[in-house]
Image (cartoon, rainbow, N blue to C red; front, side, top):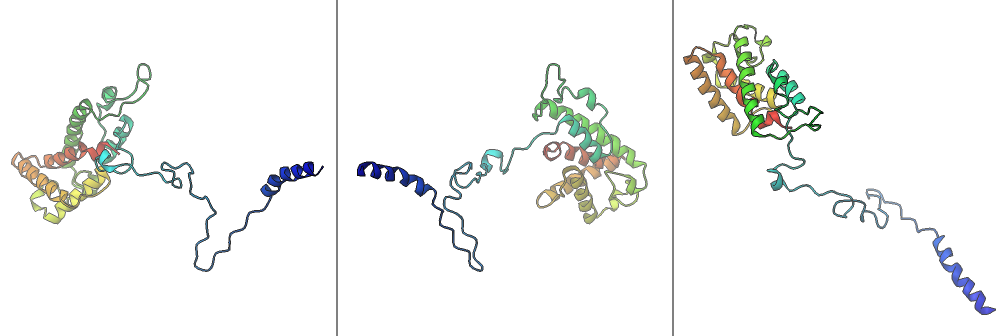
Length: 229
């Protein structure tokens, strides 16, 4: 009989221990962070098992970029970006859309957004067409506020010789912000100033001052910062 009683007590012991209340944590003192319960931060679905914190990707594997790799614009995004940045649409874009990667949903159901050579070639052709047309149209527009590529240039576009360094920097900062969302700075700014100065001298020799603005427009529109995000 005593043996049966002892076995019954042993069987009830784990059940009793499971129903015991856990010892509460002491309240935090003034200026002290609230203590975490035991086991907090262990596992938790993280990539390294250390509290759920995912490790950052290796920048060297992504050309110095931390985060996801840059993506090329889709045809629809490119159409909107050109209209917004340059002030006019690329008329041939729709006819070239299949070559630029747009899906037809008959044979191809996923849009190709690889920055391949075909895209680069058509993009350069489109930039030349759009930028030259826009710059030429602005040549006859005396009101700077009605212009896009030369909005910061006071007076007529023909007076490029009167632009000083500060005005050239203002122009390039305005255009880079318009095309890329950020102004030129650092070592890049002098390089773009030389480009505009050389293009201006050449354009004045040809008596086509609008081409100086078209050159900068083409260069910024074909830059990777315009066609990727």
